[in-house]
Image (cartoon, rainbow, N blue to C red):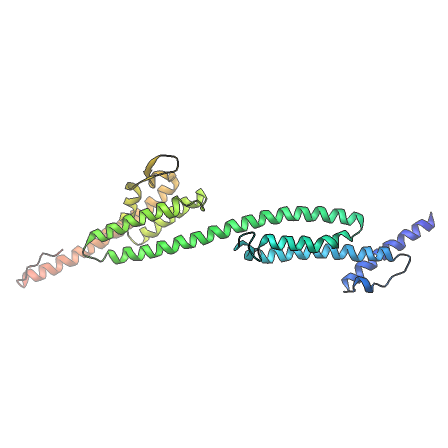
Amino acid sequence: RLAGQAFERQTEEAYLEGVSQFAAGVAEVELESNPITRAWTTAGHRDTAGRVAVAETQATLAQKMPEFAAKEPDAEGGFNQFMTAQRERLGPMLSGMSAKQRAAMFMQLANDEVTAQKKYTAARTEHILKVEQQSIMAGLTARRDNLELSSTMADSSVYQDEVISLADYLYGSIWQNDKLPPATKLDMIQQAAEYFSSGDHTMVYDALRQRRYAFDDGSEGTLWSQLPLDNQVKIDTAHRKAEGRVKDIRAAEWEVFRAITESNWKDGIFEHSY
């Protein structure tokens, strides 16, 4: 019995020696060990090498995930190619591990693959959504510039046409966009409405409430009718603030016009241009 315990201690020490030599950077072919316990030293080295390789794969995957998210899964240098290469690299390494560690690491590798697939899918979806939102916001910025420009034109119909075009853009690019989750559509419609209200484009609010569209459920109505009460209240609040600013501007403009007109009347000049 004592001899058995002594041999067990020797094998444990040999296993740990293999672990230690791997940590020191010693290659398997260069292992220093007792010929009697060499198998355990090799097992410690191989088990550690396998565990480290799996950990390195996970670290590399986390580092490269933003890069993978920007590509289709089967693209060159994409997620699927990476995972296939790692399976091919890790398979032989894990096969050389001790039986107990090999079973545990293969199970971990299987779980890691499932987790990695979920993480990639989430990252890919987030990337697509981010790109789509950036594209839409760029379009909204350009359309706000168009509104600003057309608002200075003598022909008011140009501005009205821009408002209608904007409403159609919100419907087509946001509401009918299959890449956007429903909650994101609501948020983006609200953000867009508030964005244009901040520029005092009050007719955009009117277009949301008046211009009618066909929806996927077969119904017909306004974009406003599709918004929950919470979104409506927030848009309404921004609109009322914009209306207040517009009224103040109009009142100030009228006061300036009235003062100029009264001055002109005193000088015998009569103009009717307001």
